Length: 255
Length: 276
Image (cartoon, rainbow over all chains, first blue to last red):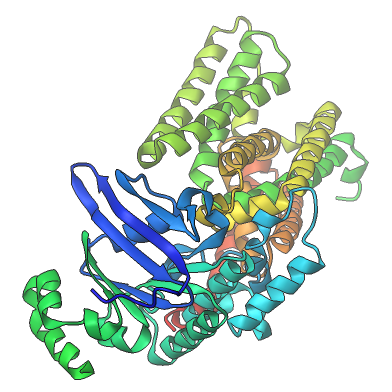
C-alpha cells in the first residue's frame, strides 16, 4: 500500500472499521487516511461495500467496531462538513424547483427557521453555482437540465452547505462522453478550491486517468494510493476474481 | 346562472368551491410531489368512520370527522415511518376498516336519517354557512402552517435524505403534512364527497406542475384550476341536472386527459434530454 506525504492534512480518518448487516460483514477491519484536497476514487466489485463506506463517512451507519473521524471530529458529529451528492436517478425530475432553490437548500441547516435566507446566503449560493459552472442556469427548472447539469446542481448544494468533503455516488453513470468531461472539469475545480472528493466509481478503464488516489475494496481494504500502485494485476485478480483479463490489459496500458 | 346567484345555496356553493380550492392548491401540491396520493385516499375513506362516530354519539359532524381523520392521519404517518415496506397494505386496511366502522355505526344509530350519499359523493349545493366558516378557519390553519414551515417542507418534499442530513425535523414535518391532508380532505368531502376527494386533490396540481417552475406557483395555479373545475362542474350540474360532485370530477378528469395529450411531445423531448 502506498503511503502519502505525512505532512498533508488528513481529512478522513477511518480506523479498524467493521460494519455488518446481519451475519455478513459489509466492511471488515478497514483502516484508511485520506488527505485534504484530493480526488479519490473508490473502486471494487458489486457488493464490495463501496456504498457502506460512503455511509460510514457520512456518519449514517452503525459501526460494529472502529471509528471514522472527519477533520478530527467523530463522523456522527461532523455532519455539516460532509455532503452527499446523490445519484441523479435518486431525485424527482418533475419536481417544480429552480436551480438556485436547490443550491439554497444547502444553506437550510445554517439558516434558523425564523428567518429568510440573507445576503450572505445568497452570496454563498451564487459562488457555489459559479464553481460548478451553473450560474447561467440559476433560474431553470431542474427538469429542463441534462443529467450532467443536475449532478452539478447537487454539487453546488453541497458546496453551499460549506462541506469540506463531497461524497459522490457514481456521478459518471449513464452520461455521455461530453458530459463526463464536464463533470470531471467541475470535480477538478472543486478540488482546486481545497475540497476533498470521494467518488464511488465502477469504470476501471477511466479510474487511473480521473483520480489522484484510488481505494480498492472488497469488504477489506486491498489498496489505497496513486492509481499506478492500485491497478496492479495481482491485486485486481484477487479482488475481481475471474474477470481479470480485461483489467490486466488496462493496468498495463496505463503503465 | 345569474339568477341562480341570487340563491343563497348557490352563493354558498361558489364560496365553498373557492375555500376548498385554497386547500386543494396548497396541500394537493404537497400530496402530488410527495407521492402520498394513496395515503390521502386512505385518510379520505377512513374519515367515514368519523362521520359514523359523530352521528352515533350525537356530536357535531365537523368534530367527529375532523378528530377521526386527524387520528387516522397520525396512525398512517407512524405506519409509513416505522413499517415502510408494508405501509401500503396497512393503509389499505385502515382505509377499509374506517369505512366499515362508519357504516356499522350509522346502522346502529337509532332513527338516523342522514343522506349517506351526500358524504360519499358530496353536496356542494347543500353547504350551510356554518361550514363555510369552518372551511375558512381550516384554510387559515393550513396557510399559516405552510408559510411557517415552507422551506423545511420544500426540502423534505424534494430530497428527504438530504433534509435529514441537514438536521431538518423530517418526522415532525411528515406528521404535520398528513395532519394538513386530513384537514383538507374533511373540507373537500363537502364538495365532492369522500370517494371523489382524491381526484380534486391531485388533478389540479398534476396539471399545474407541468407549467410551473416553483412549488409556490404550482400551488397558485392548482388553486385557480380547482376553483375552475368546481365552478364549471357546478354550473354544468345545475343546468343539466346532474350530481354535482361527479360532474366536478368529470370536468377535472377531461382537462386531465387533454393536458396529458397536449404534453406528450414535450414529455418525450424531456426524457431524451435526461439521458445526457
